[in-house]
Image (cartoon, rainbow, N blue to C red):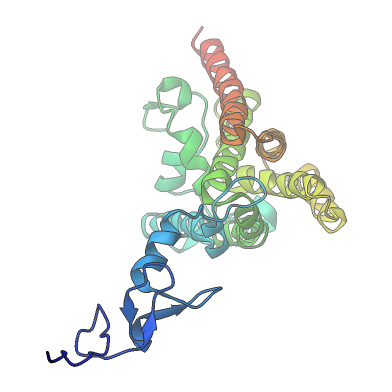
Length: 303
């Protein structure tokens, strides 16, 4: 009786390649191009993919996604601010960038149709006789005002904080939690301006949100037992700036600080288990308080 000749194993993914290697997980033969180094031996690419599916993605100390290290949320915020400034320049002319009389020693841009459309405004008649304002149903102003700046200098000052403190906070919180913080701070500042400022006085700027970032960075560092000392002078400088420079919305800046501190505390001090649920609940409470203040102000203006 004759015996069949022995055959050399071939790679299961490349049948024409002979090999002496085998996957330590599924034991199928694999070639050099298909092997992936493992803690013991080699694994094939399919087994590696199956193993990765069962591994939970890495999270930050506050439960956020590590995608925040890429800074996509901050880039999106800066892009929206730039687009609004471009629109203001197109519709308002070169003076929209700088040179308005008075504001910030003449460095602020002039009002434009874009700023008039999106700024915080309580309840007022325009020169053409039209009635505008949040109390007149233009609730979008509470959001758009945090993305509209009066000129290039105004925008650059605010976006510099987004590019520095914002990127730091996005790395720590992840993009979703960072955006929640940013929007709540901006909304809180805009509502404070709506509630306290005269009803016919407009205001806008990303500083309602960026002031929230300053206090949030301090809260986050305290929670991580990191030194918040380098940020304290920035906070003090911003407060002095707010109180000493004319035509700055004091309620807007301090409202952003308060809302940013509250949102940051809700995100930083929620503990597992059910940390995400607690963070959502905490931020929801902040949102409800902000909206309640806006509704109360509206009822007063319309009464």
